[in-house]
Length: 218
Image 1: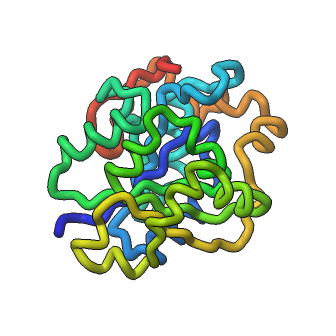
Image 2: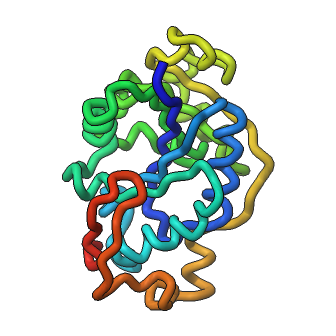
């Protein structure tokens, strides 16, 4: 089998220690070679107001990913994909030897049935859900949680080639991490303007593709 890669999508507005903690936990629990942070150029389920430029969000992700097997990337902007299913399919075409598992918090599973073509997403690659305090009951009782429940597997299932078939739901229990991007933005609304995150006028390259990233793209 090829490399075992976890995919964690999100706005990362900004990235924070909570993202890092759950990613490192997933690497250990699922024996992954790496976790790719898919820094989205635009989340259809989130408002644009208050969204920092892509360059600033990618820079914050790079700072949080230092000295780890986490690889932040803005590859969705390069692929031209906006929805999760399109991104998954494009990544599988570009990296055919990789074994991908989609990572999400239980808060996302609770509203997964609102995602565009969510059943097709579930049929594309295994999904590992990382428990988030206060959402577990709603997540498992949600339409998507109930449907995926019949495909529930243990983390050890990924140790065999057959275990990477989909649909598959792997539930991971993780110690609560109270950090959130919402709280960070509230504490520092101008975070994206700080020199370490402001890419305006500077050419930067994507850590995964090594292609230039437009610093002004929202």
